[in-house]
Length: 272
Figure 1 (cartoon, rainbow, N blue to C red):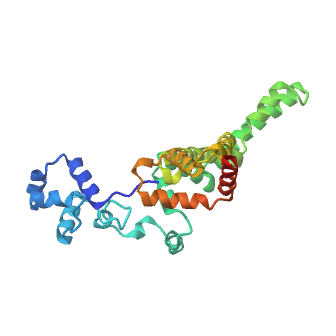
Figure 2: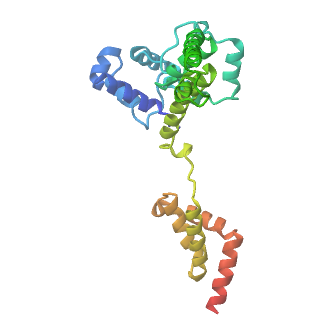
Figure 3: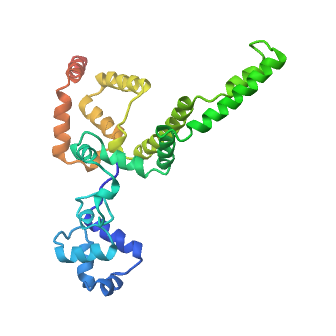
């Protein structure tokens, strides 16, 4: 999912949103430009609590959000009771049993209000009377056709009228499901851009390719080194930027593999 911004990154972004220079921000807040510059530097960590509150108030953001203690950017200045969250719901949100971050993403999605509106129509039976009236009208027309023309059961016009009847639950469930599909599909596509949310999944073809590669290591002079290089390539790890200790550690781990011991044995016999 989303990577959390540091307080320095948030301060830089907030100033950029205003389009201010450090000098202009200083004139607005009374904090020296040099101090503001330090606060936006990634290397500077000692930020004054009082100045932090000044900046939070000026930018109209929550101090807890700046400090990374909350995901809510807007300052909370209203009674939580206005959200109509009962004690059971609040307890569930605090329990950790559900993914609150995903829930927030769903609520923020532009198609979520439509899903809630359709759910409300079903739960409160808002359209029930209209649907019943439509079905009654279709039924009346159908009966008139039967009385006048005495058609067979497979008559085209009767079939059309039968198809036109609406099952309230089936129709609204389909509509709600479609709304929810759009919300979840969109969020999933957004998450696929984040490495921690989209684990690499190898297809059967990839597995065969990897198996053939491992088999080919029997004929390499240093199979562990060869596999370590391909491993780095597959996971997009910069091989040349790893330290000697990191190289040594991973190679030791690979050597614990039974398959590599078999390969090493095969290579040793081949040399003889």
